[in-house]
Image 1: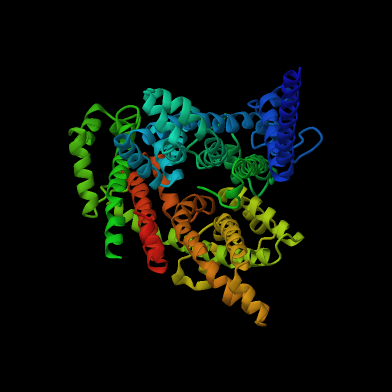
Image 2 (image 1 turned 90 degrees about the vertical axis):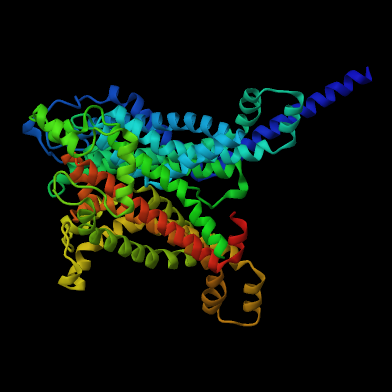
Length: 300
Length: 316
């Protein structure tokens, strides 16, 4: 009888501990107001990209010359562009392109970076080769490498994704490798070796999970960088080509009519700034959240 | 120190090798025949064949690479097909505006950022501190080409205080030179300023709690002297690194900002070369800027080693 009571007591203590932990988690999460704000901005923009196109009533491609460069009004909330297309519609469809490309680039470079970083940390010989390649690619300024790749590949959404993934993969691989190296030196990995666990098992079941948090933080920054880079490429005429809308090429068109139509520059610009700001806040917050010691330093 | 120097330079060799291979391969990943793409739709078979021959594209790829690298090592970056001149000549003739812009942007950034950083650290936790830090977050979220457009819109189009495009070399007078560069330099320097301000703040915060600052205060040193003489001098090393490393970033950033303000620098050259499919120039610029970037970082590292001996021992 006493034993049963004891078990119950332990169970309640465990439950209340769990509850406390959860409360602490939420308290710490919401204590960081900037991170919550970043999260909020990002979710709103994500929703706009996802369901926005169903809500806007204009066609993003249909040109109406009579309505060109109308200022913002009740009919066209954000005005119209140089071909009379509704700017709000263009920006909402552009969100899908710009954020979509950012997301895909982030996913591709995260997966490739994870694989490269993990295997590099495990096999010393591979490490030398892979990290020299990463060092080399990272030594070339990102946007220049992207411009050169786009010049060779030709402008298209797929090529933007390829070019930016090449630019950002080394970045993630480095982060994953450096945290994997720390894990690799720990006693439990040595114990796994002694027990005869296979390399694949050690790498994927025991090292990989420990590299995920720094990876996610870095991926948030890469997402922001990818959005900026895509916008820069499209703005320079080496990214998404018209008539497909992207925030960058709307800005490019806006530059040409900057004397007549301020809205063509301000609104797509606002979209870029908000998405980048949201992601940066989220990334900063996540980093402090995961590792409270590292606050204040921005890794690049 | 000498062994540190050699180690550091030695470690550059594999990096530069990978850089050269990557930049070399860029031309070869073009879908299709580079010669056909350069010449455009109307080119005849013979023209394409002769251009392939002229550019050495018929040679085995390893030989092409060795020839190219051999040339680069002797200062020959190849020939621009479009401009009919050595690539290095076109790069050098476009270098002035880019370098001017990068230097001016750095100056602008420092003038704005260091006082902000010191002030925010001094008034830690105050409303001003929070406002300034939110401003720097915002500053880091605005890409330079966008800030350039917004500045152009407000100061060029509406207020009409400053010219929005073009470039006047230094030989036409310092003021004329600067007038055309102020807006580009501001757009380029802003992100840098945000970064340096944050760095200054956190570095100052670390130092302000140190005992020697307390000692200085308790022996009655005037507050502004505590800040400038005792705190800032000790906080300056990390700030210096950020400044040094940023210069390479600024040169790259200048390439993008130039194209907005129509400055005839490397940026304009690379964008025009994309349209002309002038791969030799694109390769040349990317390689050239990368070399600048790598060597500036090398110099910063070495200087850091000179200033702080611990660095030499740590980084093996």
